[in-house]
Structure formats: C-alpha cells, structure tokens
Amino acid sequence: MSEQPNCVPADVDTEIPSFARIYDYLLGGGHNFDADRQIAEQFKQALPGAPAIAQLNRAFLHRAVLFMMEQGIRQFLDIGSGILTMGNVHEIAQRIDPAARVVYVDREPVAVNHSQLMLGANDNATAIQRDLRDPDGIMDHPQVRDLLDFDQPLGLLLVGVLHFIAPEGHPSGLLASYREWLAPGSFLAMSHFTADSRPAEMAAMVEVMKKSADPICPRSRAEFMSLFKGFELVEPGVVPTADWRPQWPYDMDGPEREQIYAGVARKV
Image (cartoon, rainbow, N blue to C red; front, side, top):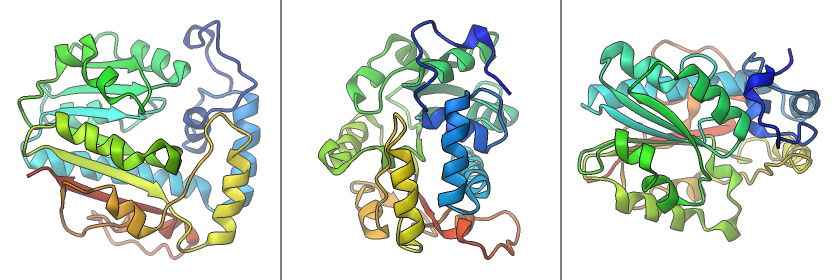
C-alpha cells in the first residue's frame, strides 16, 4: 500500500528507507514506500518473527501508558513516536481521561505530517518534528510548552528509539538531559533491541539496517539498565517486552519474545 500524497513533504527522498516507515509496514500500516518494504522484508529474513516483535513492542507501550495513568499521569511526551497507526498514546490515555495531553515527536517528516493530519481536531494532542538528540529543542518547543506542564509529573516514552543512538552519541548523557527537565514523580518508559539472546540474528539485522537512514545499535541488558540511571525501576524491572506486566498469559516461545528489553522507571 503506498503512502498518501498529502502526507509526503516535497523534500522527502522516498528511496531512502526510514525505520519509522519500516515499523509501520511491520505493524500492517500503509504509510511506507517500496524502499521501506524491501528493507522490511530483509529485516524479517534476518530476524525471524519481526512483525511479532513489533507487535509485542507496541503492546508494551500500551501497558506502560495504562500503568502511568493508574499512577495519576495525565500528560505524555512520546519521542520517536513513528507513524500513528492504531493503539496510539492519545487513544489509550484519552479513552480514560479525555483531558489527557500528548505530544508526539519524531524526526521523520512523513510520520509527523501524518500525525498532524490525524490530530487536527484534537486540542489535547499534537506532533512536532524534532530529533531525539536535541532535548532542549524538544522541551523548549512552543507546542510542547503549550500542552505540557513541566512543573507536574509526566510520562516520557522512549519506546524502541534509544537503539538508534550509537555509543558516540552518548545515550546516557541524553537521558540525563531529559531527566533534568522532569518533575519528581514523572515516569520513563523505554524498550531497546538486544543481541543477548540471539547474537547472530541481531548482527544480521544490524547489517540490514545499515542500508537505511536509521542504523541500529543493540545493547546488553546491563547496558540498557544503565540508561535508567537517576530513575527508580518499577517491578518487574528490565525484562523482555512480553514479560513487562502482561495482561494475559503468553504461550509464545519463539525468538521474538526476547529480542527487545523493556522497563519503566520513576523519577524520585
């Protein structure tokens, strides 16, 4: 299924694959191009169960938002949000409280354009185009300031995005910058690719993603846990996505269960 023309800015090179659009394809969305689909098919060959991995990651996002809502959080900043398809943060949160506020952030212009079109009539949600690597540019953005109150706790969502930051990008420093902006009682939810369980398959996927605009850097459980420095992990800590507070029993024993870690933590 091809991308709708009104979602594609004129300066977008549709021949360069983007993970936001690859992820959209893996989730069954239609906002992707031939180049994205070709890489996604290679992704699936390198990493068996790739669509299930994407679905488990999406389900973790859903449960993390519900958990934060139960803790009284009513505002969310979703960085690296990708293309809005279904089960998005504003849909989850505003189903419980229509006054819940959500800002989506992505650097991919198609993702942002599509999100803005979807949110046109929603006064409590918006999308901006910014890069994860620019915390101050995100937090000081006028639309972010209009919707979010940094004097109150919020939910910061970095789901499936920190693995795009190589070591030289200093991911721990980025997290420290974001942490400084957050009020005590805020929550951080993250998920991250790992090579701990199936290193050969993950290495093959890393090679595939080098052909895209978004190379991937998997991390070990210990490396991922270190990114929560300054936060207090909530139970069950850092676990595979399917095992983070599951809402029903899982009987899936395939490799897709253990190739992305997830965790939620609170700023005390």
